[in-house]
Image 1: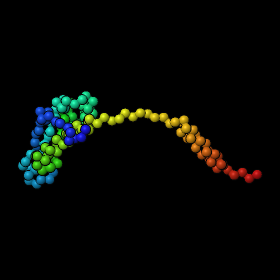
Image 2: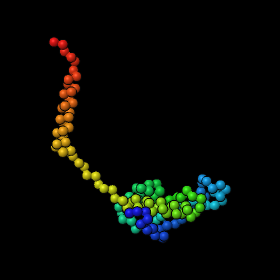
Image 3: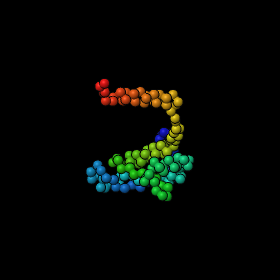
Length: 136
């Protein structure tokens, strides 16, 4: 799933604006441009496995009540920060839908084992030949 394919219902979102830090000059002190996006994850209607992966990916951004908090303060305008927060949310949800392939343990073949033992035997012979020289 790509982030562009993620559909986020508006009733699952709530936004609040707060004073941002960083570049912006005097504007930063006057205008609340940073966006804090709160997402009710239960309203997204995710599959239980996707929900568990989202919870793991989100880490400390997920509250105990099932809300995901995303704070965007990268840009100097509310609209740009709002778009950034929604884009990051879509990326998180898309990443949560990716199912990792299960690892199947493998074993070396009989021929590979025999080859390894043969290489060890040859190396042993080389090392045996390094003994002290005896003068008869």
